[in-house]
Image: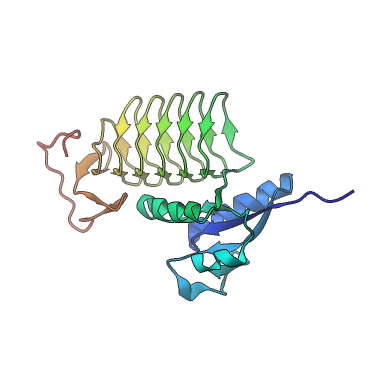
Length: 242
């Protein structure tokens, strides 16, 4: 009897989150062989070609496409929503197929929708009727509540808590252990800082930190704040105003 044919896959990026995606791939393969991991592809760091990460090889950038199988899949190990969107779009233009990676320990209620190219890390919990878009990065021990909606390219860092009926729009970034209260909205490209508790809506492109989270500055590049060094919290400013 012939062995199962494994699907070739690469991981975009060669940083910390990229090796966590390989962790998911390895654990999935331990349950049931599915993926043939070929290496990391990092167009931003050509100097890393030939080096190793998590015991596997960095192949180079997108110039390696000609050396890879035509049916190769990819997962994105890039933590910045804007860079994530750029590199995923470039990979799809090459004809690479987005891989949806869900760690075996993830708990899913019925009727969850998960878009292609999304990765969900160990110990995460997805509530009933939640909707998760394409190419989202959901790290370890994240909770997504019932009827929550995540747009494409959303990044949720370890320990994030999304309450029920929350709407997180495209390209938003939530730092480690951030929490969004029931029924609130995080606008497109917005950022919620680590350990923050967002109790009201956050407008697109805005950043908020603290308990309760209060807005400051602007977001440049979908999740990178332009004035981290000088945080000011104007008392009169509404959370919903840009």
